[in-house]
Length: 112
Image (cartoon, rainbow, N blue to C red; front, top):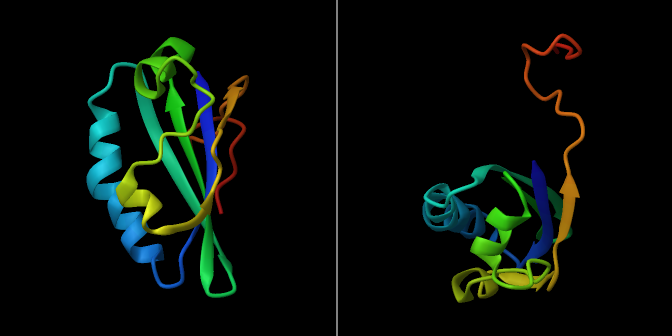
């Protein structure tokens, strides 16, 4: 599995609209693509803005390329998202998952 990781910072007051954009527009589109396995979105306050880290999960780089195009390292940021973001990475990081212990049923996980 491949993790595609990207960062951006919302404009002041745009964090709720950005999350809505991801939930209502981006994720449903991604869910229809072969090889897409899911996503996680994290945020952290930064003065009057929020820093976001978006991680999407894919079967392999071929699936990523089908979404991102011939150079999968280039970020895909639609105009609707650009309008909500003050800054964002123009390139993404791809990481190969070598251990996944996120499930609460995994023997190595801890319950809070």
